[in-house]
Every structure is written in C-alpha cells, then in structure tokens.
Length: 288
Image 1 (cartoon, rainbow, N blue to C red):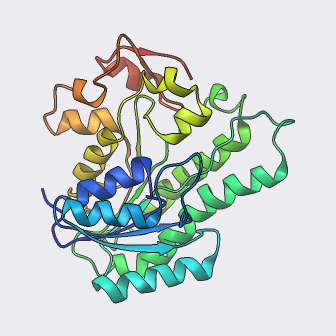
Image 2: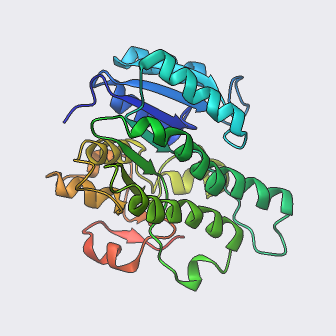
Image 3: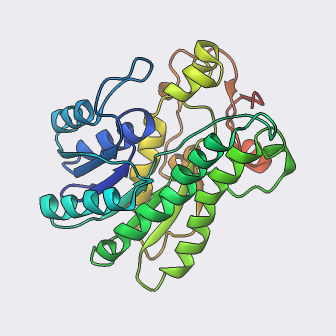
C-alpha cells in the first residue's frame, strides 16, 4: 500500500486533518496540492499553505501550495490546472475544506449559513467536478469526502440544522457521485471519525482543551484515508467509512497511540450512528 508517485488534490489542508492526510501521503513519496485560503499566519489558527508545503517536502513528498477559495469557480479551475501542469494528472481528490457554526435557526445569520453551504456542499461539488475529468484518466482514482454517514435522525439537526444540512450535502455528493461515476471506475467515499479529533475547531469552538484531551489525533484519520485510497477504486465506492472501522479492517487492534494523553472515555463525534458506537470497543461518551 503506497501512494508513491500519486497526486493528491486536497482542499483546505494547511492544518488539521487535511494536513495529516497530506503528510501521510508525502511519506510515501506522493505529490500534494494544498488548495486553501490561508497564505498569511492567522492569530488563532496554525499553519499556512506555505508551511504545509514545507512539511510535505520535509516528509518526502512534492508540494504545490495554491491560494484558492473553493467558493470561486475560476480559482478552483486554476488550482486544478496548475496541478496538472506541475504533476501531470490527479489521482486522488480529498474534499477536506469545511466551515462550522453550531447555532440554532434563530441564532444563525444568513451570511454564516451561506458560508457553510458554499464551502461544504457547493465546494465539495465544485472541486469534485473540476477534478473528475482528470480522475477518469488515473489508474486508481478516488474522491474522498470528509463527511458523515447520512444518519437521518432529528437529534443531528435540532441544535444546528444549518450546519447539519451543509455537512450532509457533502455526504449526498458521495451518495450520488459514487453511482454516477461507477462506470468510470472512480471511487467516491466519505470518511468520518468515531471520536472527536484534536483540531483547531475542537480547541476554538467545541470545548477547548477539555475536549481536546478527550480526542484522538488527526493521524487516525490520515491512516484511515491512506488505507481507503489504496483500495481498488472499482471495488470500494459509495461507502460511509468510520476511521476506527477502516483501520480494524486493516488489522489495527491498538488505538491508544492516537490518544496518548487521554484518561477515561473519549468524546464521540457528531453524526456517528448508534450502531457504530455499539460495534466499537472504545469507551466513548456522548458529549456531542
């Protein structure tokens, strides 16, 4: 299982899970385009497209940092064109970029509503659309959306309906495109964590250090993504994968190194179906 010589186009990716996926691929010797908005250091968010590129190169890969707002069709088109010019093709598209606001209907202003839908749902659709003509030419093409299972329960909607619709929009891209492009051999899957992941979103929006201490590292998502995109694209498509279950299928039995500082139960993530928690041996609290 290696991504040596493969080219990944990752939306977002200057930090967190997207960067972890990039670095895991880089260790194989992959080419990675980081298409994201952060060019200058942010006071509350680590990393830029340029620091991400440096880390990718240091890990053994080749990097192309591209300043790109995935809400803008022309910018996505340019980012894809630059990727083709630099690396000759695209093998894997990772739709990682996302916006979040956990507010109820009356507390959600329409500007934020639009942002979540433009980045999450529309952005996933647009980036996939631009990459697909090139993915059709690849030997084992994959689209991987960092999006949840379509678990249509009211509990996932009632407290933040706008955010849930935007994330489930990404999931519906998986559902529809996996069938639409099955004949082309393009795998389209979703990947979602069983537990909270220690990212800037958790530290800044979802409980800070307390929840971060109950979370796993982004590396569990990176390892799961690596396993998925190495699978035969014609045999593994249309799935809503959970990170822990992917790695169990690969023979992993010890997950402690993904949460080395955790004491007691981990925080379960949003949108995880009850059955997934029941299948897991991990002690999880229903924090979300």
